[in-house]
Image 1 (spheres, rainbow, N blue to C red):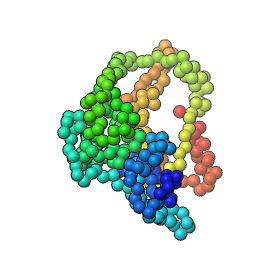
Image 2 (tube, one colour):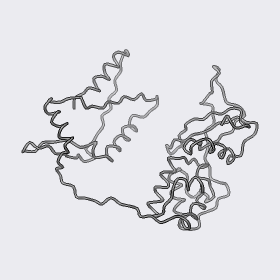
Image 3 (cartoon, rainbow, N blue to C red):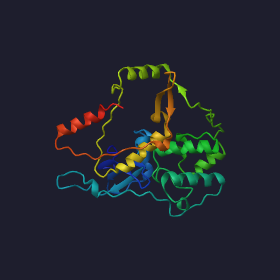
Image 4 (tube, one colour):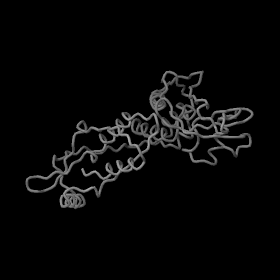
Length: 284
């Protein structure tokens, strides 16, 4: 952004909207607000799509602290608003698109205009991928992220879908009856044998330690992890032994999984490292 002739200073930060979506916000200092489409075109020439900020905020100067650093807390929060002169959806496709736009962008559907720009409303590359995925499945039409980046509005995208977009067949994975006892693969058998031979080992633990920011809600982190375990059966799969000594996989129901949260205090860095080492080398 600093390469733009009219911009004196610029700062780009990752922001989170009320729906919890992370996007890039660019704050720029210029004598007058720049036309957003022209500024976006300038950025798209030098940046990949996912690095183009969703919000562009004009400032006369960056707020500074007494230490001469940018006062991030004093920066205005970007707002993503629909057009004041709302144009309501007319076709079935526009109605469907408006519903998906509203859900992903956390904007009331009755405030959306079919002429609103997806990216001006807070859209980003991650949301664009989610949007085209949903549209492809729901409408069985081939829609790409590049189409959304080119067309941007509900009306333009709906016209493309109803006209030019090629039909596509959404492939559904067939539902296969699964036996209660699934035999182990050769690789699983090998690791299972080593674990039994050593009578419990932490050799295959994959520990991960994260330093969270102040204000992080442990319960929300736990809920997110539980959803991951719920989605991926391999994370709640046990290896058991039958009466013949053969190992097999047993998948626990998702509702049986729970996550324990413990609060510990260490009086020194060495004590902290000791506790982390104990957790990381725990034998399951």
